[in-house]
Figure 1 (tube, rainbow, N blue to C red):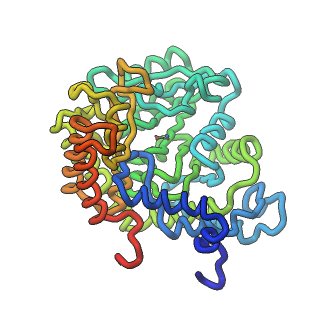
Figure 2: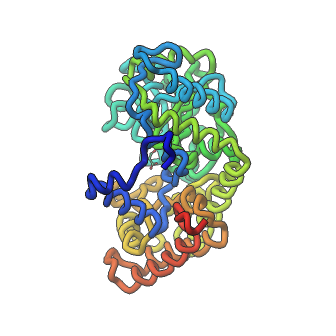
Figure 3: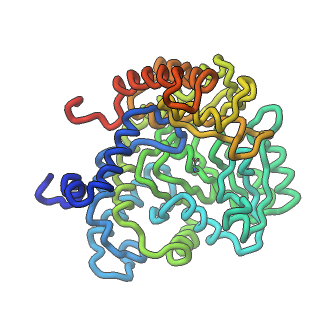
Length: 428
Ligand code: DSN
């Protein structure tokens, strides 16, 4: 360990607290030992993890750079200023707030900036691919605000823009929100902007899922169209687990006041430093190539699963994720998730649009390519991965000792050994 840096000393932790050290190594072993296909996860770099494991975690720094409520903020000010400038440059945004602790915290701040309790928001419904914080009844967003929801078109299974327009005209929402957690297709931001302008609404994009593809210029950006864009930093973007917001100059003061002091107290300066590192990584040609490959891999994975009878909704994907209907193979989402888990493949059950099953059973699975692409896998490997998923889902069992679980797990081990997550230094 460098003499000038203090932190991330695993040996000291293992000596003091072998229980937690065991969890850390156990989780690393889990990541390395199986296929990680959760669309909202990724493997952040050792550089990002180093910033997270630093003494910046100690610092109280309420306020913003140069305007803090505590002394001793000179060093952390540098980190936050770098994070803000890099974020603005990466997305071509007027303003960035890098203090939200998470996607849900970022979204709370957007509500705080633009809405009073009881006012109306128009957002995508959760069962059709939205997010919990987009006005669902179990979230603050549905309890404190009047949420009206649009869904997907029954034929195309993509966002029903005509319904968005109709509901916007009928309800005159204060805010119109685009984005979700299970939308395989790129979103028509220009259409949303036109609808928002017609009814005088703020246009907000929750880009948590796809912001990394925007950073790598693999798909169109919402930034030129939206008043405000909130996002998480740990999905395709590959940064620390956290959130951020970019907005136009007009909304700078409202967003900053809503993040602090309205919704949050002390910012997590170690995480902000890690976000700065991540935004620097995302500005490189290597990251742009990564983002392009994430999309190419997702397209092949979706298509090949379809060839195995596991139908992609919307007919495929333009992004990092696809959503698959299992009704054709007569397996529920819950059973598919359990069978894959037993075979060393981590993915999640997911409701599909117009799902006849309850959400905790579901008729679908969601798969994403951020992790496997970070491992260096390409289209050939995606065909192999699709075949393994299909074998586990259709013929497998939730028992890890079942013959199919063992067979698929063996093939998964071969694949992840060839494309290791967090390769050991010995491998280069
Ligand atoms: N829980 C997250 C997801 O998996 O999509 C929502 O951002």
